[in-house]
Length: 338
Ligand SMILES: [Fe+2]
Image (cartoon, rainbow, N blue to C red):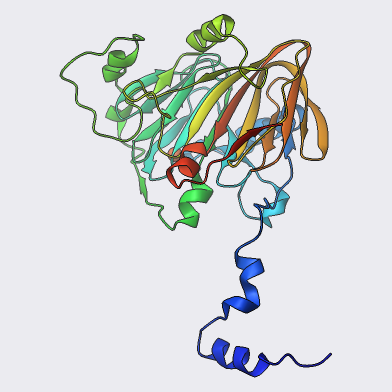
């Protein structure tokens, strides 16, 4: 093959630590987004035995968190579930305390089998009843304790891959000897429990929601009352009560009810989605793949992948966590119905 006319120049430029755009623009400005991953699917029946093993084989006193992170192989061994997000299940045995810490990454917990567990967030006690969402916003101190008689497991998600891509992670460990950390009640969480009411004189400067716990009972009531949206599913967004916007500047959470006999319209969004099956069962087509799921299975919808969902054998509820606000703040968000 003939040597290209600019080969000597490109070589000289590279030696001088300068790259010619004309030689590589297709690589650095692709025509359309191309997520490295396809839909990831993790079955609760496959995860549960590992939760049992981790609980038996790893002492919580020896580690930071007993969390099993769902890692998609498309990310080459990186601890990533889908673009910008990780999802996990955390396991606590009765009496276990997961040491307090805080970090710049944003995280959420969604209670699947967590009855008896409590998350303390910035000095507020947040119970973890069936279907409860608990936020652990950036730089808020948080620790977890199982006060019940049974093993607890909940679903976690965080934007650690995004924060690491921005080289913006700070992490501060807490103390295992800090007994006062655990001796708190609901505290100021009470200020945000009454929907549609705001107490005066409680300034909240942070960008995240002032409310940390979103009870599953309220979510289910609203799903019952809501009508299907344009894509055919009932969708409830968890919002910051002060702004009506997302619960955190770079994480957004939704409860979605797939109505029996009513498959959703295909939809693609320029954000990543992790979906937890909360109740019922269903079938999803994401990109080229079609798969079925049931309670407490987890699957992903990579960015800009067409996705459609249908409930099987009755209504089915999903909990969905996305990085949508991060995309919106960068003016990158697109959302299309097919
Ligand atoms: Fe954490």
